[in-house]
Length: 440
Image (cartoon, rainbow, N blue to C red; front, side):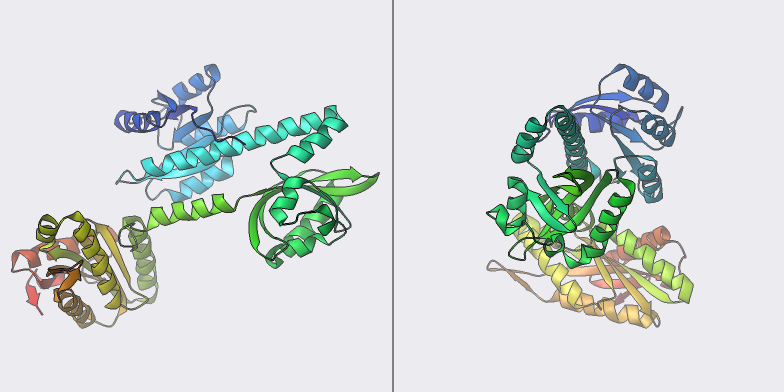
């Protein structure tokens, strides 16, 4: 299956600035992008134009994103829809998937979604193309048994037929996916020998359901085992079949190992800082929400530390960005060594880091960790033969003493950090102490 390199896309977005920004970003990749400033105008354009894909913003006047989605998924032959939501609207995204959206993406303040969106668009278009190819293949099957036989042999998908739980046919692509050279290595063997044990029950249930319903079962993801025992992730469609005049099951499957690895890399990029491998802003706020929920439920204290490196710019300007990047990586390692496994340290950007100290007994626990961090970071760094010395200014807010709100706690810690920096640096300051700096 050839990769989709360009597409005609419609973007429904009432924010003209964001719409033009995304339009230019996708046009640079070869896509053609039209813009509608509300849902009603967008649906009219869908009715007139031939689009490969529609991006729908959730929050629009004159027919919102959900209304557009309901209308489009109720009709056949319309292009797939990707729902675009704002930060904190993951619940909306889930609801959109239930209504028939093909995928979704969350807009973030750092505009990172502009880098992730082309990957999601590519996956959606690839899936749509796969569906069209399969539909064409099944139509061809009905027209000619001989043509079907050739299609099966040349199909880019693995195709296997099994009766009473044993292989009776497998095409060349199927043999390649399952790691066999000759069909005789498969024929007559139980299909479960080539299914990962975690999916044995699911396969049994699918075969039983197929026998009862006599209808094609929807696409599902499973894990197969090759002849040598290695695992392979697959996408499988199962449908009823007649082989030598007897009822059988036909499985059409595709190796999606690379796609799953790409998805895992995408998820990693969305949650972790590429330079330090620490959680990024997105994952930080998710962890902060979890700690806040637990603290409220069990009436626990936790501390939020906002840390800014002192003299980092001087190191960057003197030795170059490569040394600066290595320094940030070393700082991340030292911060991790100062904390418990239950704590979280994240890079917020530049030379700013945050630390969540969960389940502390009192403010002294936070003070001890802040002192430990300052002392640890004050030790010289040796990077590619260069010795660098930096410091850290830390602001601290405490839940629930300072606030019950995560955003407020972060702002308070940030404010306390700037006060510590203004009062000599390499110190820490509690917000609740009236912003009085403390030296270690």
